[in-house]
Length: 213
Image 1: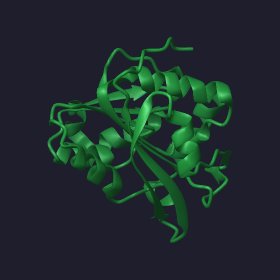
Image 2: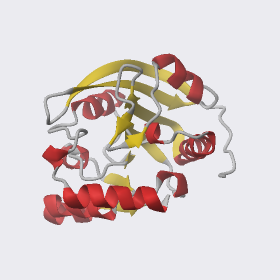
Image 3: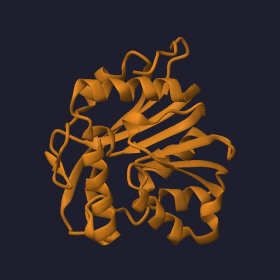
Image 4: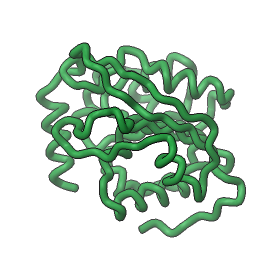
């Protein structure tokens, strides 16, 4: 995990947003999905692997009041804070590897675009499953985006695990009901296309909290 942290600190220290493939000028997919849920502006929202993405800016502009941004890279979060200026004080910032993250907060909306697919072993995947199960509020919503089976095999030089709609549903079926699944073609700053698989889930009402690993 320490090697992963060093890797991402170096990425965000040496590269600007237009030099990394995942950059979006505006996070339309996440915002459209969130607004369709009609959540309260006081809903607890977390962007996992948010780094220095523009989702937090859009959430603040939409008037959401309880926002958490988590990333393994402190440099990425500092970049976002500098961009936001005084508005950064309105956000909760968390530096953590997702598999080490522990929280007592119950989130109404959990957003993960391209973190989960970096977890390629069963132990890490199961840690993530337990975490998101426990961290979501009753009736909480979860939007997950990964590289699809037509997407890249690596990101930022690291191996990833591709998902189809079927395998994503299978992975989360124990504790989540599927709300909506769709694919998306992301145009990178380099004018290349990355194929993503997204699925939106809602926590099952009969889900029991599992012990974190």
